[in-house]
Image (cartoon, rainbow, N blue to C red):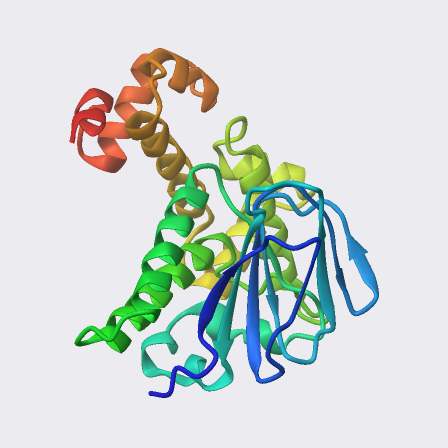
Length: 267
């Protein structure tokens, strides 16, 4: 495999633009960026966001005066996404890079730490000549996509004609914003002004799973992260995540993760 223009660059300059016309660009904007301008349109609410940009996009990132990096730009050769290892990912199936719209992902709390680790390992490998370097890079890139896939395992930009996919996207976005308050399918259906049955029907058709599984996936992921990587008490976490009591939180965690909160924290 020709890695070509595969590289990772920190966002350090006042203005950052595409460096290679033959590459896709994944721009992870962490903080201290004034805006990103894409095809003449300015986006300002971009903290902790990832943009997927094709060579056809004319873009630049304008950041504030600071000495630290504001994020990273991952440049990918066009042919790399044709690798079989990516074929089963929704993020590739919907061809985010080929959209006429601007695909954008907001990362969940804690995910940015994992994303940075993946990019740092990739950057280290790119500069070496280790055996099996290409296989390792593809594996890390797939891991990166899987984390992004968890945020948008349907297209982040939906055609108006695909009403069910559009609805599921709204449901996913609603979960991301309100998971600490809403835990039931009926609550999200009410937010979207539809019936529970229709919401489940749409999710099943578009993603192949039921609506509750998406809620539980996000709730357990965030709860596990809080248990493993914060010093907050189980009681504090249970209430922050919207549970009615620490006892019910413990029951829920044991049901979905197989262990009590204290055991999850210690393993």
